[in-house]
Length: 340
Image (cartoon, rainbow, N blue to C red; front, top):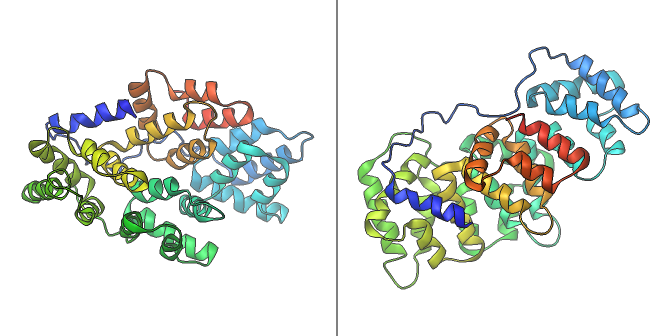
């Protein structure tokens, strides 16, 4: 966390030249196989599943080296040739964290996000961190697709599930993000950034008691480019900067939620790099977080996440995975990370 705090302090000193025009560019580590043949891959997987003891190496090779769209074609080909769903066949022969990764990769991105959201609100205790991570880092299009899939698969409205599990300012923030109406305009309104920066300062650091509604409104409605300009102007009012102010004024899951919006707006790959570092720090590894981030970002920005991880922690993500995981789970995570 300390490294990221230092990183965020750069907000007040940055020249504002951050380029948001590459937002649609892909920096994934997983690419489509140019020699792809769905029927051949389905046959390879069938043989691997039926092999005595299971041929995990082939499963890793096929699943981790095909794009998500190609995996959907493999699923269809397997179903057509065997009459059984590929996921069901793999469930019978795989186990533990390796099984979790493989099954996650067979889902479409909206299906996987919906699955993780459902798992976060299922049973005793809500995993607020998962709700915050997904809703705080996805685009409007991704949130809308996830909500639609959630309704189709689980027969429930996501917003109603959230209302039943969280409350207060955190509920207000998550429901605002669920609307998927946040600005995604790369153009910056300089005047609005100045007035928002002042409003944030007046609502929190410059008074006794924080007016959370102002923080929620600005952080859940402005574009990432606009937020970065706001952060810079905020530095003209405060010596500490917005990130430090939020930590001083807020606490708990609500603080984590707003900090996610701040960090994600400023540098999303660095935000995920920190999450991965914390998942592997100390005793025990949070494999759920490790799996979710590596799988969900593998075709989007995992390459950038790997670069940020090395810059922030002085070692490669692959080195950390080798130290903290083992077996087929380790192998498939490393395959997804590529050879960088």
